Image 1 (cartoon, rainbow, N blue to C red):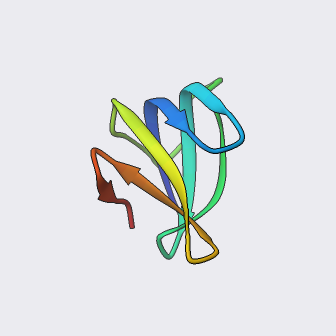
Image 2: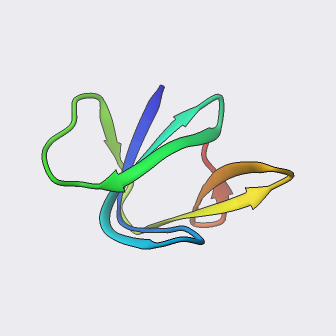
Length: 67
């Protein structure tokens, strides 16, 4: 599993200031507010946008899909 963090996470159901996104095989499996240091979390900064693409939630940072 890959965990990435950013200043803002934008999804269809909510926007999170300071959030973490969890990915498995490039698919979003979870996202939540950053409340404490998380081991093995990669800080990207900026904004991560979560989009529904062909029935799967995918994450994009600066227009590039996160894998």
